[in-house]
Length: 445
Image (cartoon, rainbow, N blue to C red; front, side, top):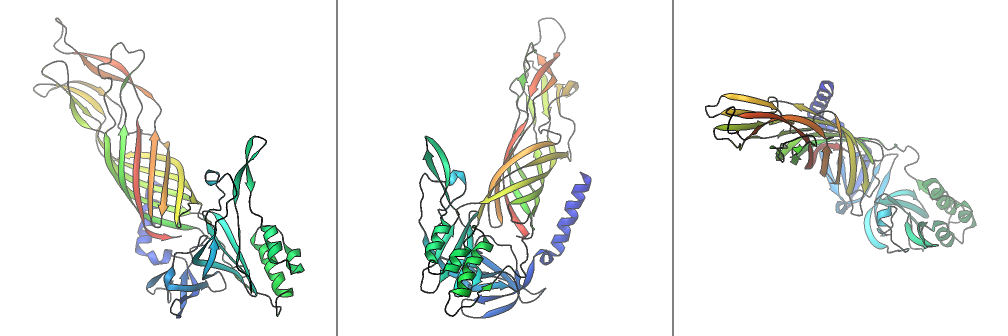
């Protein structure tokens, strides 16, 4: 664990000292809305959905300028990907995820302006974008409107059972669109980029007037999807709970219902994500700092006897886990679920105890009580949503139920010692729920 902390600290310091070196810039150009072409380096974010903004610098080490969609006409990575502002019919209702499927086939394309990726540019062109992990391709030829081809599924009833049906009739649509070009019809194959490129290029080479092959982008000199990272801060709150419950074999339970969890406390720290190519999976590191537990006096049935609960401690929780992301129907928004292991490190505080004192403050007796946190390496679960540099996450962890023998004070009998103590058996299960908001200070995605 010490090695992990040192590694994360060193990595954070390195990125803080050299933030610009962490970005992935490639030679390219941007064409601005007013017609100016800027040549230099464009940040490669391995886009799947239409880019909302583009970061550009004139040369390595130069100031970075960010251009939003209204300021752009096009941009390109030299000998690589090419994006152009287009107005195309986009059906955002096309879905693959089961929870979003309708019970009938629905097509509602609406004209929308966005930076579409150009795969083939010629007499017939091929463009693409993605929405919520659904691929949308466009073929367009002179004298014809653009044809949208999209992955889509829907639910249908068959023999009393609900099944998933494929609503992507790309073969029939391409057959109609290029029906006057036998070469293009003959090239119709699978619903994937190489096959669609083959159809478009067959038309360009053999049926266009005059025949000429279109320019292909992204294939020759294409940079494969790369991983990325995000480093930032996280803050929020956490509710920790754990009540003592009388064990079945316990004859008495004077402390039953005592809350040892600590309640609501602020939490803050630092996170670091390593994103896999495609941006659907991420290795997630988090260091969270908080104070848990409570220090309080408890009522006792005997005058002159004071009971003090003390299980408060400052805690550093180290997490190592994974996250799976998928896009929502809202542009730039992604949901995620995650899990991993968390290991708490106590930074201060003494052993968790329940101690009894007389009126003069002299210690009479005491015993251990449950810590206000499920210590040990245990799994956690989380879910949340990400929008740009901001991440909202809900997380939780549950400890298996343990049995504790805790010293309690019974009422003083008519005859006997001044104070009567006895060991009682209790069950306790510590759990927490938290909500945090993270902001990425440095990222390359």
